[in-house]
Length: 177
Image 1 (tube, rainbow, N blue to C red):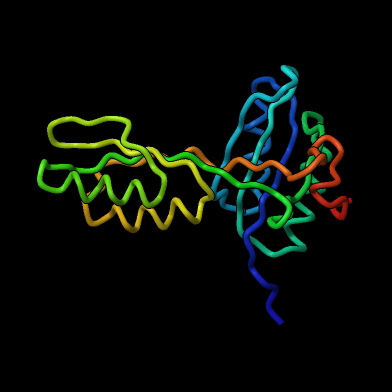
Image 2: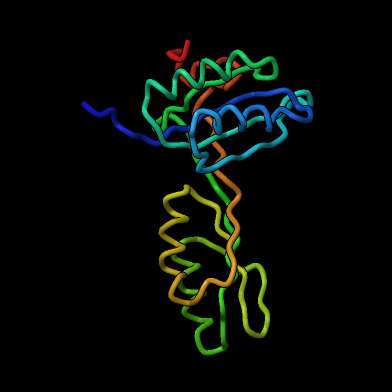
């Protein structure tokens, strides 16, 4: 029987100092896990950074990896996010070819997806969208026929709904220990 491959979101509070990202990403690389999305940012505590890592894999191996990460000195808290109890967001900037005759069509697409035009030049437009990753994927499919010249996505950020925080680990299911 083959183990099921699923997408997982790992949240971690880590020390805000140099080398931490290298050690954590190195552990993933040594285990053969490709990180699909990685977001690292400052938190309300200047001593800590927050990492959100999206990857695909088997559940058992993933939890073994989380246990190994939890043993690293610079990892303060870590857990796997519950998709139903969290808000997922990502930002994308997309530069499209935009001759005068097709601009109105592009603007109509941005309005449907609640995206914005943040730059306009004689031949291009830069569009901005912030939403759940699957909504951004759908927007990219709609915009693709207009010729995407360049695109940058920030990586997914996640926060638990309600009063739970990563610090208390409740929103990340303490089943990793």
